[in-house]
Amino acid sequence: MKVGITGTPGTGKTTVSEGLNREVIDLKEFALKQELGEQQELFNIDMEKVRDFLPEDYWIEGHLTHKLNLDYCIVLRTRPEELEKRLEARGYSQRKIRENVEAEAMDLILSEACQKDFKVYEIDTTAKSPQQVVNEVIEAVNKKKERSGIVDWTDFLGL
Image (cartoon, rainbow, N blue to C red; front, side):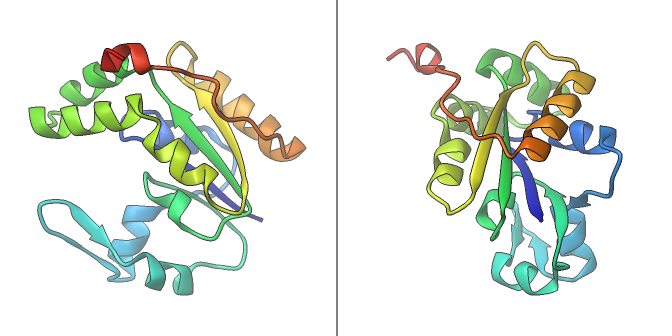
């Protein structure tokens, strides 16, 4: 099975992936190793070529994994105010913080994932420990649960 763990930067993809008792491919590291991406202002990945180099079955994490041909996609979400704090702590520029926080508030990655032909399961990580999220990911994948639209952060956008 091809499983992706995606979400806006800062939602917990890497932390959750590290807590799973299995190998999870880091999309950016994979692209670097295979020479399928390059650092410009942003790190650009050739997703078409990535598809050709992936094994038949895999778990993969990264904010672009929902653009792959998956069987199942976990979308991690975090309340915009909390996400802003996490990105500031990582030293992101104010412009990148604003872009990512707005993308999260507008459900950008979730809506892109839901347009694809695979099962999607959304998890709000805001008030959960990493282990709680890991447990939820495992249960969701094992039971092939589907869920989207559980959060509404339009209040952040002032709508």
